[in-house]
Image (tube, rainbow, N blue to C red):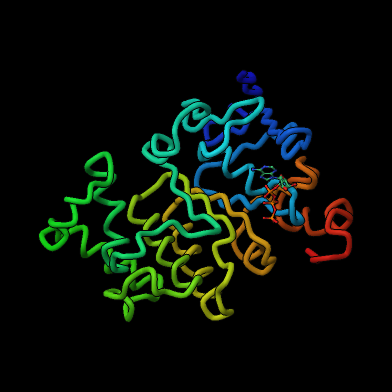
Length: 263
Ligand SMILES: Nc1ncnc2c1ncn2[C@@H]1O[C@H](COP(=O)(O)OP(=O)(O)OP(=O)(O)O)[C@@H](O)[C@H]1O
């Protein structure tokens, strides 16, 4: 059942609408009354305490979960009901909390694979035989691997990387797709402070290139370094939304965190 999109959200610069989305698991309301408008070229952070519904929201956007009610609309297309790979093909890429990689392939092959998938419509293993001849894709993959600081591990099996390195590799796998919207679920989880800072710098660079991003993050240093706008979720509802300074000073946000992480 798709809800009508509110007129107030129908602005030209809005690339993604989440319209009146609800998600229940049995009797649990994981998401309720969610309305979000993500503007082109901006970084929109979604924050909130553990169990607030952040990952559920991201999973609804990328088609891994069907909303109980409501719709997600990207660039005028209704995504609700589409398979995750179809949503990926319309220009949405995502980095999840648990990296999705090919552990037996090298870092370089992992970063090249999504470019083949985009070109050929689906990832086929026989595409691997053409890895060496695909100079342009290889060169771009090598640049991205440098950007995410993994050049020294380029020929290592991806399965042997640390969790933080896998996440940076997965970021490169997303960037090679040139997505219009990049979804990042805790992109710096499991990273050292130095790697976190390097990832923040990289994400700032991507922002300068105009890529729209939704970021879920617990590290407030990362959130306030990157976000243009912040929505705060608590118990499945958006309790506050605005510019970083507005959200930082909102007593409802402090209350939601119950003295845990201060924003
Ligand atoms: N597949 C599922 N089945 C049943 N309940 C679920 C399922 N997925 C999530 N939930 C519940 O929905 C609520 C929201 O979970 P979600 O993982 O979206 O929160 P979150 O804000 O991402 O939390 P965290 O910051 O800890 O990752 C929680 O109460 C969680 O237990």
